[in-house]
Structure formats: structure tokens, C-alpha cells
Image (cartoon, rainbow, N blue to C red):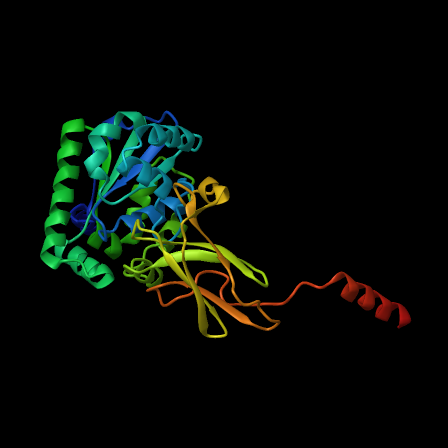
Amino acid sequence: MANTQRQAALQDLVNNGLEVLNGDKLSPEPPVAIVVLGAARGGTSAVAACLDALGVAMGRGALPPVYEDLELALAIEEGREADAASLIDARRSNSPWGFKRPGFSRFLERYHQSLGNVRYVAVFRDPLATAVRAQLSSEADLLGTMRRTLEEHRRSQQFLKQSGAPALLVSYEKLLENPAAFADALADFCSCPNADREAAVARIEASPAQYLDHTRNNKSRGRLDIVEQRRIRGWAQYLTYRRQADVAIEVNGREVARVAADQYREDLKDMGISADGRCAFDVALSEPLQAGDVVRAFVTGDPFDIMNSPLTYQPPERWWQRLLSRGSRGRD
């Protein structure tokens, strides 16, 4: 009995790097907003991935591995307050709903009230590890990144102290050591009692390959949509830059065109892929494609093709070819 009590007492001393602030202010009334605070490369993506696994709606276009709602994030950062308010209202159709954007602490005082019934998850990572990750991913200045990381942590701490808002404080290093404890604490904090906690644990991985690839400074995404004899269409954008992406088109290994992906497409805006819908490209070819030509499309500077590339061109069947084909089948 004494040994059991001793083990229980020691268990109470285990540091899981988790702490709830102002837990008495957790309101169960929907809709509940879960906002992730933290520095860039500081563990916010791991928290957002777990929230997604627990069933928290992270927003339109919030894709793995970073789960960022760029539509809402850019409206906030560009000062489009009316658009941001409209998007927040739309997100409230889900409960709980989530939002993650490194550096959001700069806007907390402006948007805290409009978020409604909000709970914060503030993740803290070793500033040196954060800076080294930023240096490897985007050639960022090491000491400058450390300074910005510490400033981000300071702003978050100051806001949480002054606002008295409910918050779950998370150590990224401890999260990796004991993912099950973190998943349990996160599910409880977000009022997701029936969520798949094992799925959340499965999302936790130190430096996953997909994340390392995604956070490259030249990382892009896009899709080669249509390849016609004299026309190639699709969309592309950088993930970390706000400038437009330039797309190179190759046919059989030879570059035949280079164009800015800056044209408007309403469907890209509606899907939340682009805040203003201007990331499409439409290339008119000077020489027509021939059957069997291999078409590649990629953002310049990124060694990887966009989705659906390469494509092999096959000309559409002509009406007389269809008739001949039907006639051949009839004679058989």
C-alpha cells in the first residue's frame, strides 16, 4: 500500500509540459473557437494537425501538413476587417472550429472579442530549435529568428495574463515525449470527449518529411488542369511567399513557355485556395501539341511538378474517327 501511494505521489511530479490557465472560464456554449498561438516553425502545425484529427474544423483550404486557413489569415493580416468578420461568422457554423496562424498574437487585442467563445492553445518551443528549423527551411537569420520567437512568446503570455481567457499552454518538446498525454489534454480542453484520441496521437511526429518539404522557402502548390493542342491551363502559388508564382511549361523536356500565375478564377476563390482568386495561368502555345507529347508544369525555383503533371497529350477523337470506329465494330 505504501509503495502504491509512493508511486502515485511520484506520478504527480511528472512534468508533461501542459498547463490550463483560467479553466474556470471554459464555457460549454457553442460555437467554441479554438485558436492556436505560437511562433513560425514553433510547433503550431503539430497542434493544428491534432485538432483536425479530433474533429475541429480548421477552415476552408486548411490542408495538411500545416492546416492554415489562409483565406481568414490574409484577410486579418491585410487589414480587411469586414472580410475577416464575415469569414469568422461563416466559420461559426461548425463547433468547435479552429484557427491557426503563427504570429497571430499581433492581432489578438483587435479580434479577441469578435471570436466569441474562444479558447487558446499556446505552444512554446525551444527558441534555438525554432530558429535552426527556420534557417534550414528558409535561410532565415538565426539570431533574428530567435529574437522574433521570444517576442511572439512574450506577446502571447502578456495577452493571456491581461485577458484572463482560458488557455492550454503546451511545451512542444514535452508534446513529443508524451503525445498521449497531450492528446488527452487537448481533447478535454476543446470539449471533444468522444473524439478519436488515437488518431490525434498518430499525427504527432518529430520533423515529419511532409512538413519538412512543405516549409521549404520555394515550396509551391498547384494543378495542371487542362492540356489542349494549343492551350494549357491550371493554377499555382507559393505557400510561403505572397508574390505571384511564375510557371514554366515544358514539352518533351524543352521549355516552351513561362507565365505568371496571376489570372482570376472564381472557383479557386470559392474553394479557399486563393484569397483573391488570382493564381491561375492560361498558356497559348505557338506550336501545336502532337499525340504522345509529354507536358510538364512547375513553379520556377521549385524542383517538383505541380499536381497532375506530367501529362501526355492525346488529341480528342474526331467525329469521322468515331464513325469509322462504330463501322468497324459493326462489321465484326
